[in-house]
Image 1 (cartoon, helix red, strand yellow):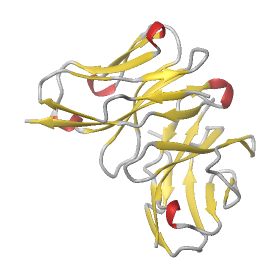
Image 2: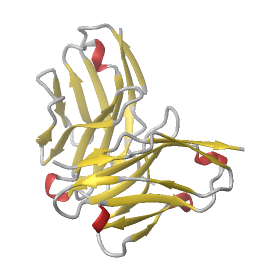
Image 3: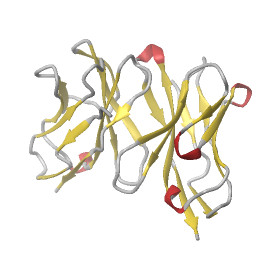
Image 4: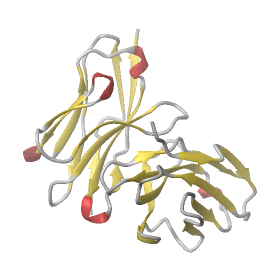
Amino acid sequence: AQSVTQPDIHITVSEGASLELRCNYSYGATPYLFWYVQSPGQGLQLLLKYFSGDTLVQGIKGFEAEFKRSQSSFNLRKPSVHWSDAAEYFCAVGVKAAGNKLTFGGGTRVLVKP
Amino acid sequence: EPEVTQTPSHQVTQMGQEVILRCVPISNHLYFYWYRQILGQKVEFLVSFYNNEISEKSEIFDDQFSVERPDGSNFTLKIRSTKLEDSAMYFCASSESGGELFFGEGSRLTVL
């Protein structure tokens, strides 16, 4: 069974600084990989996804993520954080053969200091 | 832009009562899912549904839970006899081909 680990529960970053959120997954083959963002009381919005091909993936809101097979990682980055990026971020892994049932990580809550 | 819609946005119920959460997936999507998120915890898979039957379910999805696609547009989650621990945000999602999932805004269930 697949699993996802997000090592950082909370991250505090200053507005304008760079952000990197870590995600490690466990799965025997190449999975589908996703990053979702959840603002307080809101649903899950897809930031970006990796299915195959170029391992550097661009998403919405200026986010990007890089799939590194050798490290089983899919870290999310943003060069310059805005106050509106304060939210909880979830990494997820999906398996096509299982109808893409997603397994989510525990989430990383990002706080943005002015 | 097409979206997944869920009703109600918030429901409060007494323990032991039946609850039905409703979802309207994106119209050309074929795969449907329910997930839940207990407050402060991770999002957990409950069930996936394809071709009018459950394709996979988690251990959380016990006999108290059922899903149905009654009319070709709605996708419902029924909890037959709610327990306190069923209090959570329930997310519906749909997918065209089992790739990218589109999530609804969620239905918050509070069991008293």
